[in-house]
Length: 214
Image (cartoon, rainbow, N blue to C red; front, top):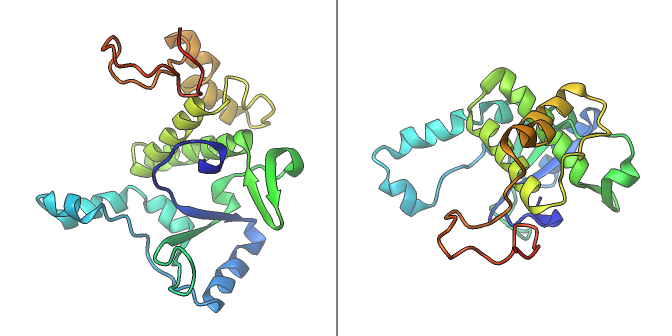
């Protein structure tokens, strides 16, 4: 999302592969000296130390991402590379649900890397949310996906029509109900103001997309 313009402070290095290439990608990282490692979701040390039971809290955090962890493979970036110590997640597309049609119009392509544009990424997140809802609604993974969609809905040109060309009726209906036309019909248009305190006199003069407020 960051490369599209969503101001996230931290993120993951996630790479999605066609299922038939997934095992080969895992082996290639192993052969290149990437140690396989479980996901590290520890909060900052000062936050962790302030908790009454840090290990119990960490266990709860990890339980919320069990579905993701079962379906992906994580590695540590080795010391001889930039970003050493960061983690890399390899994900099969049967889990990520990135659309593979219209690659030229749905992705920015840099050599062999395909960066999904807004519609492809929203479709992926929505389908992943639906999968998570069927198995682990309310988990931290489920909530994180919802948060990612909300941030894209706010900061990018992601509007009611973003999934109009999606062939998956369930995904189209879910987006409409939670973020699109049906949501606006029930709750009104999205408020894109950044301030959390309406009427405080401290609202930022531009909305999330950079448009000046009246």
